[in-house]
Image 1 (cartoon, rainbow, N blue to C red):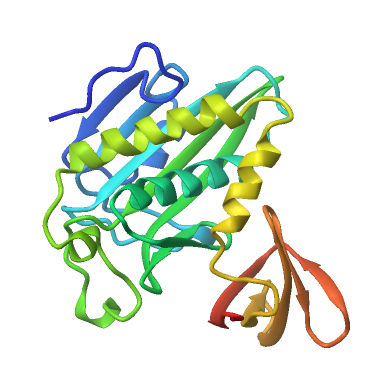
Image 2 (image 1 turned 180 degrees about the vertical axis):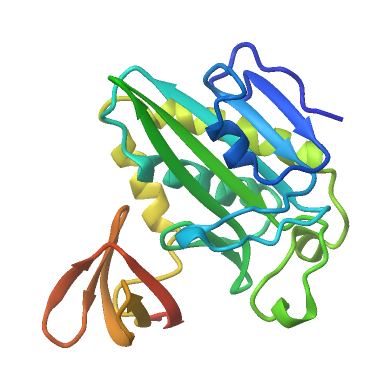
Length: 253
């Protein structure tokens, strides 16, 4: 069952559902569809889903895989606010299910110290306008491969039973709409960032092992988390790092 059409909302103005496609993000990025801002593409299965750094995202049946299109009449749109919007959305949705979740900078959602969901935002410009496409992937009822069970978790395990994908999508879209209308307006994104920072997996003082760009892995101590960077100390004082991947961590008490 497809969630109801939302004519009075920013997100979910139109919902397209597919059994199986290569990628919900790629479909929205193509010029084949002419869709209004707020349109959602939902697939029961993706064959070429992608995550950060273009990595393949396993997207089998049973999981929730969808993307949202945002159209703006200005080019000055910051992608990281959309990652934050949907990261906080998922955390808030999970809180309603009595599940404590954390955001692993910059775009993953963890529960019980295992990855549950991820968010990817991409943008492109057309003259003075811009399009933002936000992809969301969440393990819901899909089985986690044995080799990944120490690193990944699904919603079914967390709540103890299977959940309707349409219901989960509907709840997530409703939460995203609420947050968007409250915070994604001029000069209010900073309040959303504050909420996002309260739910960070990494706290100041955490010991991290990171990969910066193409360099080898390095040990660092976290100074601060910002929407588009980590402030790290490699032993030489604070350094701002944007293209950084955290591969191991010990969270500060």
